[in-house]
Length: 492
Image 1 (tube, rainbow, N blue to C red):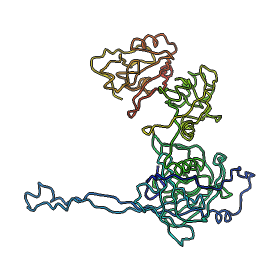
Image 2: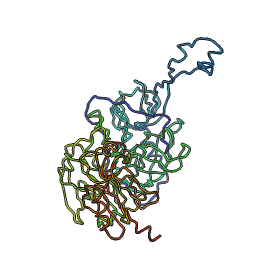
Image 3: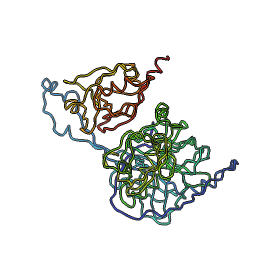
């Protein structure tokens, strides 16, 4: 995955202000099927709103001597080490990107990675007319969405009009505008290839809802405008999928609705606070949909509910499937996580769940997402055994004791049986179970020890088991559901 910029980063400001006054036209685009012969009028309308951004940052490196600076060689060739030889060296990196003017009084939206790590007064903005270069203040930046907001001291700028990106559809014609490879402002045309894309480009704590387009986006285009055929801003160009850093027809843009939400909070609060429900979620797989008697694989399955959180207070339980949030259908885990995060803390929300095959509506008041949220195998003296139930063939399990808890960093609140070992190429390994996982439920029945797991598993029929498992992933423990099915292997 190549980021479409030549250098990147983020500086946060603490001042507060009112949200920028922006122009918004939220009606749907005309989709009568006719293709314009020219988009020159649209380009003339939009081009003055797209700016070039250059940023500089100071990079420190270490000076190293040649081979004869090694003490081993110095004993033969003499000489004393020069203390200045290991002094740090500094040099400046220069990055190039693009940005979009979204208010007449100088607010500009770009990518966080365009200005990340920039020196004080190191971000420069050039307008389309090229007559003047401004030193920009970084109002704020949000790495989790890759959005940054700049401010230049200027008036009566050519601000772009914002569209409602929720109304964008696959197949809509779009134009990408920016400064690729620093050749100057350029325009490319394509269509919206897909919506709601998320591939982990921004890391495990990132919030991705990208618009995918085949309009050419190249290094230097980052932070530029993706507009519809009426010249309204629908997205901020962000990255490309490429093996060599150049465009190959798969580019991504941040929907303007998401970017605007982040922008408003950065301007008013200097930071982005996000809603927090307090659940661990997992995708609804075909196997899980079958076990929970769901009609399809949409929604998000609740694998765990944290104590003393809005989710716990609302009555949400493990095994519930959230299918609607505040009246909007939940497509998958990523979609729900994004909707919760975009909702301000202290907001009262409703969500529809499926529990035991029936729909139910719950309410909660969101908390603030903690900042930090942005396994080892057991051993020692425990007595372990191997389950002889078909689905858990090849799985060693043991009771939890103090030694096991310390080794696996397993909280005292977690009860069940720990997996000590798993045979390779077993149904359990294929399902994703790992040594160090703790089985807390089997077929919706809580378990307290290894004997409980074996007893319930032996009574099960059909070679399928639904397990709720606690895992310690990256130091953040939580529960999730796993279907172990040995019947498929028997048929092969």
